[in-house]
Image (tube, rainbow, N blue to C red; front, side, top):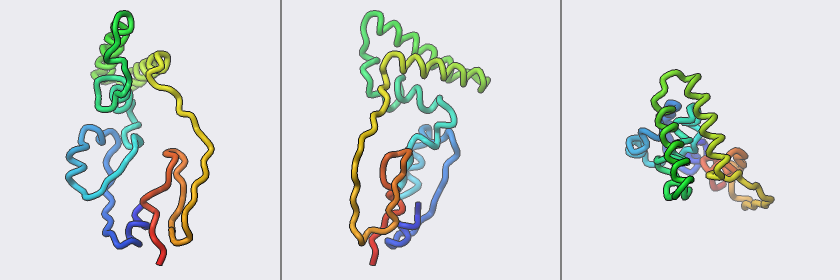
Length: 149
C-alpha cells in the first residue's frame, strides 16, 4: 500500500491493528495517524463487529427497522434481544451459530439487499503509475497510485 505514497514523497509507517479491535478503538486509532483507511475486513473475523453495526443499534444502521411498528417492531425487538445474547455469549462456536441465524434473519427481512454489480470502464492517464483494481472493494488500490515523473 505504501509504495505509491512513498513515490509521492510521503513518509509511510504502516500500523496494523489486531482483528476484532477496529470498531471499538476507531477514535484512538484515528488520533494515532495523519491518514488511515480500512474496510470491514479487519473485524470480520467475528460477526459481532458487523451484524449489530449493520442492523442493530450500532454506528451504521441505515435501515428503517429501528422505526418499525406493529409486528415488525416486535420482530425487531426480538432480533435486538438475540443480538445482545450473542454479544454476551462466551462460547465462540455457539456464538458463531447464533450470528449465522441472526444474519439469515436479517437477510430474510430484506434489511440488506444483495449488491448488484455493473459493467464499467475505468480510464487513467499515462502519467499515473501503480494502477491496479481491488476486486473485493470494487475500486482502485489508492495507496499504490502515484504520479510518474
